[in-house]
Length: 252
Image (cartoon, rainbow, N blue to C red):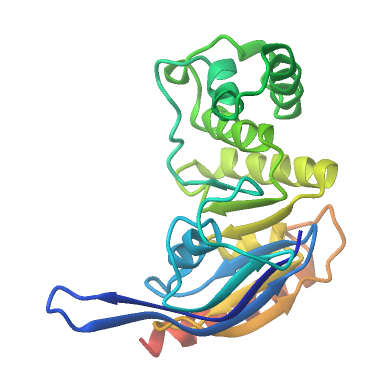
């Protein structure tokens, strides 16, 4: 599904009661099946934007719609994965993945089939009856991905989902995400602070300006997958984006 963000603004009240403009006149279209990474200086409103797309927060101005239908609250077409694993510790991997389906009243036999398919998709068949405390960080994040995919959302929102992982596990999870995306062709909007991660994953990289956040630059990543982090074209784009981020941070 296509996500259209039209002239969106978000204003919070500061502790002093004065308006704090976080996002201002931000417009962006994410096409169906596109994987877009959003970068920007700290405090530029990346997570706020993602929460509004998810329907967890409301815009102060402007409109966000998915395939022409305005987002006014949590929407079954959209799933969000947070940096924290947010798994239920008292539920097994299978029970965690099944949770959203239970809430929707899906019959048990159909639930089993969906859960089995998504656990296989993330490669956790041997850990279906394990509890979160028995899993590594990367495996827990895979459970979170499987749980989100089980409800078959058209749009997957990811807020720094690999930020807490060690470098080796993070690289492995990036490859895993691309494998799943190539198989499912979901529309994915992915927030990260890592330029390397954005260049490795994205079809396009959207860089937001310092607060109030607006679209500053959009990079088309025309590097064939699988991408080689040591290639000249990869290094050049990474350097260009890093230099832009440095310039933007100096403006804060």
